[in-house]
Image 1 (cartoon, rainbow over the protein chains, first blue to last red):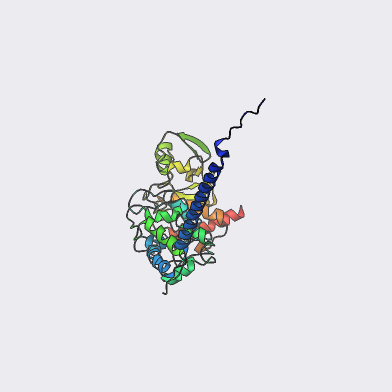
Image 2: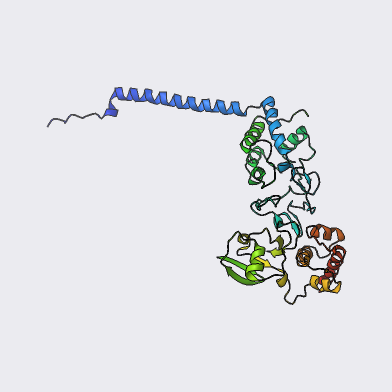
Length: 210
Length: 153
């Protein structure tokens, strides 16, 4: 009996193998090319750039110095209040953990959400000042001083770069743009602030000259 | 339904979860020792204890107190003989009396956390409680006396 002819499957043809190999090469190179391009773009975005970084911090600084941020980063131990940043009525004090003392703890009045009505206590579940051992003062700080402070792990609440980037997304930071009736929001939109914050840090976290 | 534990007693109330705790205490349950002063957490007349903290019940929604322990002036002590209540009577602290429940509830948190408060500690703890009759000096004296009574007990 003669052998039955062996039928080659399509992928067993030499022509097919050559075409497949070429296609694989092209796809591989393209994918690699795309990755490489992505890396380049990423590197370009994060490349240290003191001019762009300092310019971005200019926007950030305006927000940090606005009452919505500065009022809870006071130079003293009493928080500030209102668009004129006066001392908080009733003179509540910081306390060790930043959450007040005795019958004067922040959460006794500040609820998880804003209370209704003009001038009523704004709310957030984490309402607090920075703690006593890391006051992170904004009040009275020049742009240079504040930029250096925020980029200093020993003075910024022990935050590394990733944690600093994340901090701008913190609910308490976001609350600055939703502080209840009768309070002006910071001078630029939240999205614009986050973009400037990221740019400042990603491009090197440079401090302005002054 | 909202479940509240007030002065060690359980309540199940068919009320809006956004209702201020003060409303539930006074108008629904009938515990009227806690007073309505300003309604915006500025005066301290409505202070009650929520899990031991001196919260202002006029801005605290009942939903925050659900399933938690609430203590009002009526439940501060079993026989109305908390050291602060004894001291208040001894020194005739009250004049019109409207703010005094809130004063005592705030002072109780101070004495729980600081057995020997100084004048400064008392100021820090009581800054948020306003008295239109101006009984502040007697309040301070009574808190010192209450601390002495508490430490003797």
